[in-house]
Amino acid sequence: MQGLQGVQGFQGYQGVQGAQGVQGGPGIQGAQGVQGHQGRDGQFGGATFYYIFDNDTDNTVSSNGYVEFSNTNLSLVNTISIADNDRNNANIHPFLTTIDDSTSDIEGLVKITEEANNLNFVIFNVIVQVMFIIQGLQIMVLLVE
Image 1 (cartoon, rainbow, N blue to C red):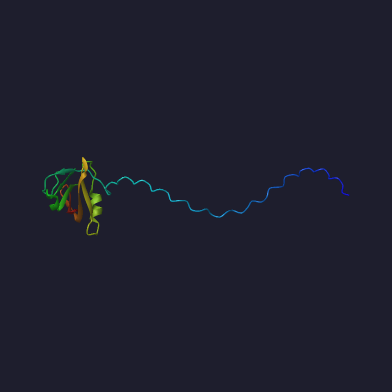
Image 2 (cartoon, rainbow, N blue to C red):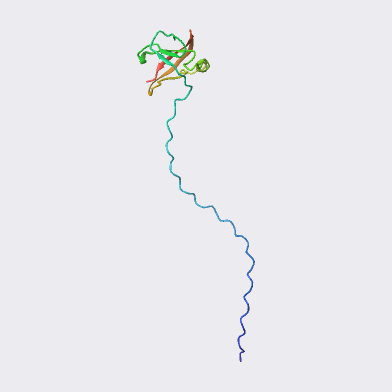
């Protein structure tokens, strides 16, 4: 004959925490982000000097602060005469000496822009070394069309 079932015992204590598991593998690469906004238009590179345009075409400069072309027809301009100092009294000799030291066929570019309308400009290639004239410099150029 079987005896009576005994009383249920007490619940045991909680066990100790187990060891940390191994690190998982790398996840999948995320989607590419959206393209950024287009940047603002840049300015003309190089140095900037402020001159007053002189309509004379005699290849001299009357005084500091003036620049003139050898011809009133831009396609026929072959020299630009530039006063030693611009109208802010900045001396351009060091800058033009750097251009003069170039050994390239095109020694640099000259961009002349109307101050009141920067959309009105002309660009010339500097093609021959700088020549020193009374009160300024003269550079031989070719119009960039």
